Image (cartoon, rainbow, N blue to C red; front, side, top):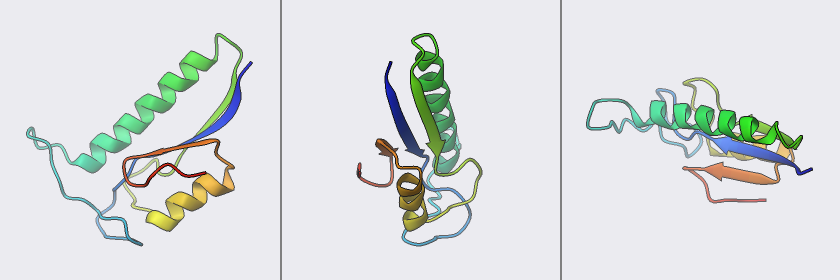
Length: 98
């Protein structure tokens, strides 16, 4: 049985630049804001990891740095990984850290 803690950072978000993290107004060719795409992708990755862990009885806890449109800023994102004692940290904003 595998054990671990995964922290997923959706990146961007909100309507303000906060603590080194840009609100990022980039949009896809279809007009969808990048911050919405990164948040949705984080939810999909979280759900897929949980689904894959269940059949094997793996104990994998998964946390997101944001679950809403609010931009928490870079230091707050890193603080989530640190406070949750993440084994793995995935982000489109920050480098992997431990």
